[in-house]
Length: 223
Length: 217
Ligand SMILES: [Zn+2]
Ligand SMILES: [Zn+2]
Image 1 (cartoon, rainbow over the protein chains, first blue to last red):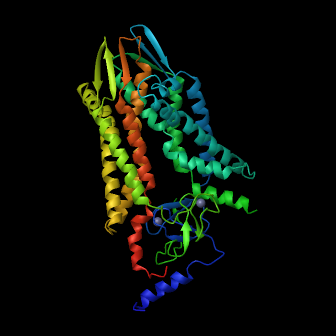
Image 2: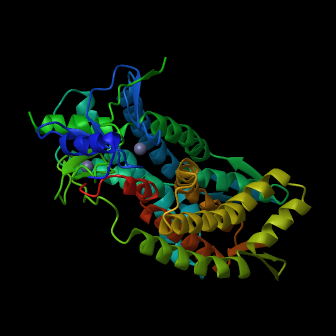
Image 3: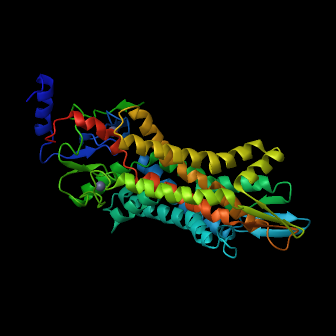
């Protein structure tokens, strides 16, 4: 060993670091290992090295996540069945539902895009909201997790970047400005439902603490 | 009030890999090696994503290849009284500026040009820095990685603009708007670069610091 005292003590810690039987967490960004300790009420667990927030313990976080997921589900259904936009040029009226917008590319030369837009703005946000509700509702009611809750929750995590309802609404606003001079546009209930959805997406993103929910699911399994 | 929790790192920073553990990026649980499936959440475990940089570069390359026709071909074809005017992405931005819609022009420009181009550059820079085991600006590189991960999906805005315009302004009117082939290429480019960012394992950015540690880890 050519290391000084400091180096040797490092090696020591390496060997005696993790103890079998203890539970550990690893930072997803820099891989630093932590002993899994309960997060104090209102507190937050941050990685010492890279400052990534690992876990939080905010009162009512699960309630807010569940409420946001369930409300988005309702709003998406409203958005599907109510008129989205109404356009009138010189007395000719054209209505467009959300599905019309999603399927706009269907009879054009970029038809495959129809499938993609339908998935991104309707199907995936719905599946994600459903999966979150399915996972969180039983937990919130104090029941054991539903059958396949883990798989549903993992699916929700995977779908997060691909559920683009909030990106879509920005696109709608840009489009409205573009045709503002061409025609008069009436905004339907579906438009407002999608706009409210943006707020819910933000609430959900802030309050959802995935690692805590995984801990809870794990605890139930080991009962 | 925000309380800092007692994170109790096994100091000096001991990584899961050095301790013989595999960290799960989905649920956080560290499992002793060898382990393939996370016992807590069922995800496939990788101490580091296998062939991460190759996969990042492959997705980035197809993303770039799709981005070129996305900019050269028309995004929108507007037909007014039988006359068709094709418009590229940048053409659409210039048109908005002409109408004095600065804010909207800026949104479209940011979503369709600024974000994709800076995303290509940032991913290339990150891959290059990991490849040459750079130790510079680790925190800044992590921030760049997080921005790229977060912002990529917002590029899809222009595709949705085209979708709405197509749905609304259709045949039967004096004007008709149809999507051009660029819409497809652009959507593909956004999806490919999102997959590229997802293939990047941020833990690789920190790995150069592990060389300091004893090699028995
Ligand atoms: Zn970290
Ligand atoms: Zn896991």
